[in-house]
Image (cartoon, rainbow, N blue to C red; front, side):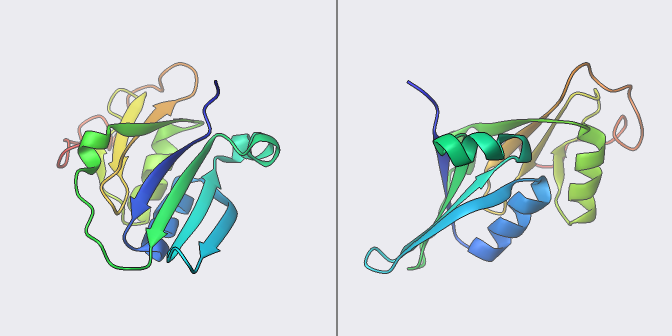
Amino acid sequence: MRYLHTMVRVSDLDASLRFWTLLGLEEVRRMENEAGRFTLVFLAAPKDKERSAAERSPEVELTYNWDPEAYTGGRNFGHLAYRVDDVYALCQKLMDGGVVINRPPRDGNMAFVKSPDGISIELLQEGPPLAPAEPWASMPNTGTW
């Protein structure tokens, strides 16, 4: 057995792509299905692109159904987790892009954000935790994560 991808249904493909690419993922392939009235967009982390090209994994699959539908319950999905080079720098980039940091990286190790469709994403620092730093160390949680 091997992990292939996680599928996330999205209600606004453009907003979701802006979020996931701001997070650092890159589109690796796309499929439009007119008969089924949906679009699939597969994304991979930069350090996983070579493996994605060879094995089509590990990836995130954004599924956009052309007929409007409301999606709820992103929190009970659980979360996706990514190991990142600098949790502070990525959180700053996301904040600068308008993303709410739901659980700031106060410990220099872990943060949580949400996609436009309510999917919780855990960001974990590569290697040992970074030294506590502001504004993160004193920033409160925002919403649920």
